[in-house]
Length: 196
Image 1 (cartoon, rainbow, N blue to C red):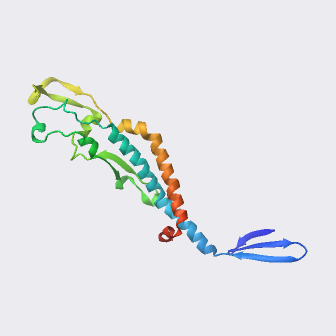
Image 2: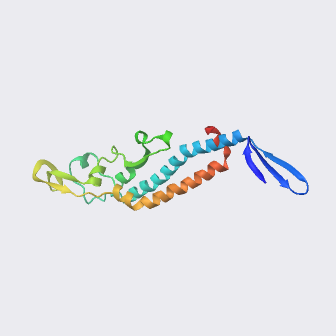
Image 3: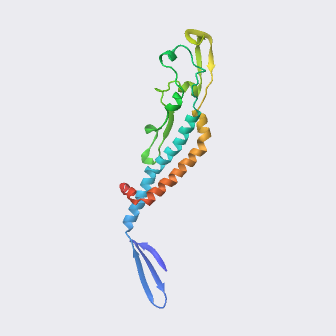
């Protein structure tokens, strides 16, 4: 027979020909501290690791879908004269970043954003969302002359389709990273010491 643990002691009693009493003792306080540390570690590290893994999938998908300049749409004048368009500029400007203002680490809530560096690729929003063109273009040169009626330049979205295409893969990557990180924490109790 066994009786519930009290003060870290589990009693086993054998009701045979001879009565034998044995006890297993363990430090209940230490065990509870370790469980609390595991809880704190999972709250602090698991969601963050999982969010990074999922975010990388979205980032990579967005980079794969970003329009790459091939020269066919270049104007001969305007800003292209000062800074010649470079192939892959937008793609190379896409990054994954921790969102400080939208995350609540004390609650285990971590947000990562996939975006592009607008200083490196200031045209990203024009491609993602489309835009109205108001000026006349003559012979490949933009002019300051206004069009009678603005012309809609269609979007070539890359972030929205990347999200739609990679959503399930991102969830799977996040869950897989969560399993890996849990195994790492359980396999190395020293990692838990910082949370006690």
